[in-house]
Length: 133
Length: 193
Image (cartoon, rainbow over all chains, first blue to last red; front, side, top):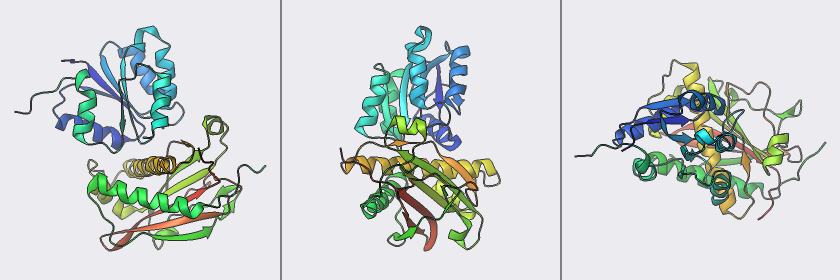
C-alpha cells in the first residue's frame, strides 16, 4: 500500500473536487495535493516530489498543457519515474497513443466522465485503499 | 488571411454534437432532456475578426455564464492559433449550480463568481471532449482542443473561429421543461482520416 500523496493537476476546480470526492468515496486513504496549472504542478513536484506517489493529470490546461507537463517531467531523472495517470475529456485512441509516446511509462489513461469503479481500477496499484467491509 | 475551407458537412457535425451531448448527460447523470434538442443554423456575427458570443440574448436578458473552447487541425495550428472550430456553452446563472449537481458534480458555491465560471468551463470542457471524440469516431482527423475560457454574460472580445466558415449551429437543450443550456458550434472543413 502506498501512503504517499496524490497530486491532482486540473484547471477546473470542480473536476479536482469531484476526483477527490470520488476517490475518498471509493476508499482511497491517501492525502491529496492540488495544482490548477502545469506550472504549479512543476513547482509542487520540484519541492515535494518525495511525498508524491501518483499524479492525476488533465490534458487541456492554460499555458502549460498536461502533455507539456509530462514532456518536462520525463526529462528530469529525479521525477521521471513518478507514476502519472491522465484523466482527461479527450478520449480517442490517437490521444492515448500520443500520451504514451510522450511518456512510455504512463501508468494509465482515464476518460471523463469516469465512474468510481473505472478510476479505482486504474489507480488501485498506486494508492492505499481501505477495505469496503 | 483566410485559413481553412468552408465546411459542407456542418449539419453533420451539429448532429454529432447533439448525439454526444445527449449520451454524455445520460452517462454522467442519468439525465434526459425534456424534449429533443432544437438545432438552428445561423450566420456568424463577426466583429474585429472574432465571433460574437452573447449569453444574455439566449436567456431573455437573464445573467448567463459563457464558456468557449477552440479546435485546431493539429498541434502546429494550435501553437499558431489557426482556429478550425469553436464551441460555446451558455447556461443561465440561476441554473448552473443545479445543473452541475444533476451531473453528479460536488455542490457549487452559487455565491462565488469564480466557482460559477469554473462550473461552466468544466461543462464546456466535457462537452467539447465528447464532441471531439464523436468527430474522430465518425472518421475525421483527430482535432486538438484548447482549454476552456469563461465569461459572464458575454465573451467581451468574442471567440476565435475559422474565417472560411460563415455559419454556426445553435442547439437548445431543455431540462425540467425549460431551455437550460445553449451550445453554439462552428467548424471549418475537417479532413477525413
